[in-house]
Image (cartoon, rainbow, N blue to C red; front, side, top):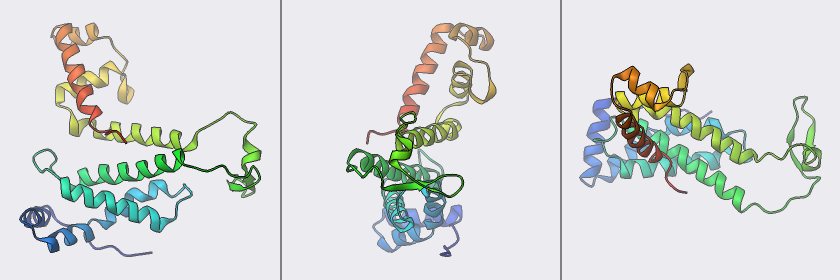
Length: 208
């Protein structure tokens, strides 16, 4: 297993980001090298796909490089938080692209193994309910990404309204009127808060 360099401290990260923004390409290389551990961490979620680990690392690194090039410290405190999203998006784009351009395969071609380790083919599963595995996985990851990002993207009030409105994290789903009564604000104000919050959350999922 490859050993990755230790992540940068907050001070080191700020220093090298500042140097890179001044045109220092060596600083960019350091930022890449010291964040490869993050790439490996994100890639672990995709090791159940048919892609080789080296390919996943390569694509994840491209996402990291894009993150370093477009990072804005005024919007996100840490590069790692922003880079994690970019790496994840890059990998999801790859999977979606492969899904769209996949060629037909033989019904008898092995596609994996069952719980007992027996080899299964497409023919073994086509009689069951049709499931788009990549799309299902992509949706599940999008939901996880959304829930993990709520507190970072939304204000405290927006977070409270969204969690109550959609019954997140064990809360009961409430109407705008119920939330307005609970927070002692008007229903129209709740509506505006919800609308603004949803607009912010949509920025987490750029069109691919």
